[in-house]
Length: 265
View 1 (cartoon, one colour):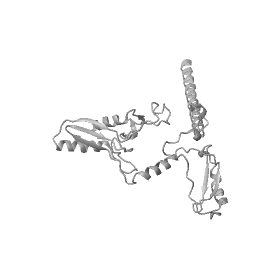
View 2 (tube, rainbow, N blue to C red; view 1 turned 90 degrees about the vertical axis):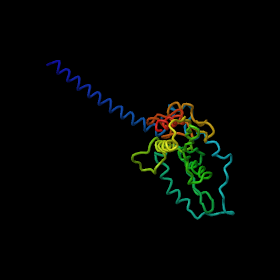
View 3 (cartoon, rainbow, N blue to C red; view 1 turned 180 degrees about the horizontal axis):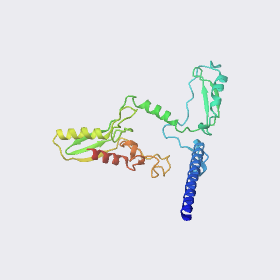
View 4 (cartoon, helix red, strand yellow; view 1 turned 60 degrees about the horizontal axis):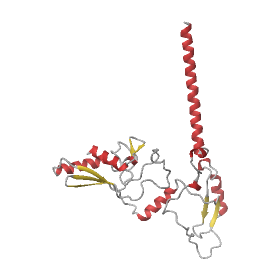
């Protein structure tokens, strides 16, 4: 009986130690995440200096010299109260979620005069750069443009042609809050129907991802981004955003998309 009691005590201690370890691990992970979000871990995870000031701006988007804001002839006063802008915005700039590098500038759109600014040190924006990217894209591409993934067939050969669709899926989702998106399963079914109608039972398959030119990885990215599964190489032909089996990223997205298409076909 003594040995059994001893086993029960040891087991209880093991459970207690296991629970304690789980609590400590959870606290450590939570603290680590908060430290990461606040930038406290930058000096450990960055190979060099961190922060917006050290982000390389995308080539071709940032002009060599900023154009002055158009102004009315000799404006002297503004219809907007600078004090009112400051009172409305200043309390919000100290929010912890904004991080350490926060800048704000406001102008009167009527006169072009500056109203109020906080931290006028030039900063390179992070995810808000997407707004500039979208504006640039819509400046050169019609808003209703569609990026179609197509198939060319001739002389017993089928070529899957990437049209730059970033949302191409392996198969249609069973339920999604988003608008319907193209998928390789549907494209393969339509291709099979066309081949059967032409009495074609055997084809050679290839793919064409030549729509995009330039490097598949941005020169401004760290060399470890692609091999470390952080980003997918940019391609005019990929499926599920270049991912394989969930979050594993394909090293050759176009070839992977062709394999998915072949299996579906």
